[in-house]
Amino acid sequence: MTKNKKPEIYSTKVTYSLLILRVISGGFMLTHGMPKLLKFMNGPPFEFSDPIGIGVTASLVLTIFAEVICAVLIIGGLYTRLASVPLIITMAVAAFIVHAQDAFFAKEMPLLYLSIFIVIAIVGPGRISIDRLIESKKR
Image (cartoon, rainbow, N blue to C red; front, side):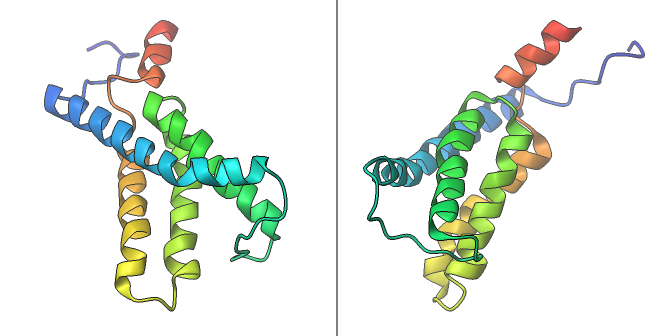
């Protein structure tokens, strides 16, 4: 192993598992984000919560950014770790603030997404990703 090369940590099973995890979780997140984007594009009036006190419009725009833009980035494996951060924050807000007083079943979905995006942030996109293509061209 040369000094500049990183050891290969992704087995074939892990590689394909990360690809499947990214594509499915990002795709499912789009099903939550696209309706919000369309609602926003149609203009006011719209109803949306302001769970952290930054205003309804800002809350909606940040949620759309996470659930649409960041989800697409994760699907492609582009800026994957960075793109997972807004999704982690959005799902944490949904689970622990928006649904704080609700029964567990209302928190279950955001907690599941939160767990998935934490794993993606820690492990990264895997070999089959745009991040990996960019990294290999730098060498």
